[in-house]
Image (cartoon, rainbow over all chains, first blue to last red; front, side, top):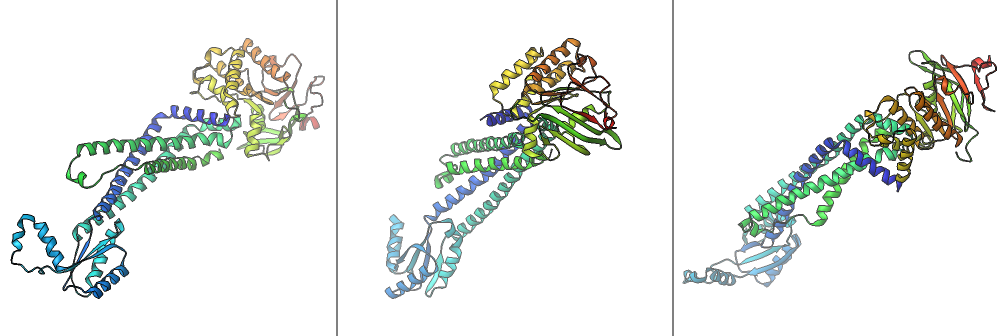
Length: 295
Length: 246
């Protein structure tokens, strides 16, 4: 208990004495967390949007002739062999005609005189809803194209390709900003603590002569680093939330926000970011104070 | 002083220390100091008094010889053993070694904080020492703003704060007037009565002229034999040097 009291007292004194460099480090950590979490927020919302869009995703495989029951079973078997899907529906020429007629609504008279089987029969394949499906859909489509009797495979190919490229880009940005966070937090904290160590060399030597233990000398620096990580990450996330809230209010009711649910990080993710930043900063300070033991 | 403290608190056997290029600070110094004894170490400036005290708190290591404090060989002790021993030693440095931006109270408290004393004890002991040294009004003053005499008293207060078993004082009254010197000596005697061992390096003869304590003199790094007829008052503590052996 006395140890803790002494360490906390020492930490608070250090923070008061070196508040200017501490503030600079805190600002750097805050900005790093803000940059990282900004891109990460976009990334996870992209993934969510991908899932959302995937709900309506289907591959339409047009066939040259109506498949009989054995051929349907054969198609089903081959499709399931390639990949797991949510469901497979066979649409006959007549069913396609009926659907089309309904879609035309009041304009259905344009179909007058047309044979009821002028639309090709098709298979509608509904893949499992996940982002991974999006990444595999092209391969799936290429495979379906190879099946006998297939005229054409249709899906929102261009849209999916673009979306997937963007998600890939975002993934790189998130990794890079994560690295930035890693470097700035550990290096800035380590650098600040090294500077503090230099400026307090005389004091640390005196503490040694008075019989201070390594823990007594190192623990306040460790605590300082952890505190900077904790406060810096909370500030960064709070700033991001303010921006997120502004964005949501500013663009409320717009097409994009209506289409995709734009959400903030769930609590576990917030806690993970805070914990990671705190541990990184504490780690940085821990390693930079190793030389104290050699004083 | 604990019941199991050794009878001899300080033991130096043929200790030598040379600073580069060839300054012989101490040469074959042998000295024993009993537990609970107050010993005056005298000699001119540069005689080796400060070096001897620095060896005793292991700020320096000897080139040759044995240095033992509280039965522990200082050459072999390290890590937590050394830290614990240093907490039992109170050193008042000649250059004070105060932290100028810390307040007077914080400077004194430092010695007790590293020993994990309770805050209530630290506050009480700090006030008590400041009162004894007539510095109560300086409690919150940064040490850097004090006069040299005041700084010296703070350095002494810090050395005594933890009620150490061994007090090492390097010229503790060098910047003090007669009246304040008396105050400091009273405080030292009080700690002696409580069982602490004190080694006071000084060239102020008035401090030891009462004859009640053993006085040893260093000259050019060598310990001189006591003058004929001079009582060292050391009981079974021995005073030796190469010169004495000769």
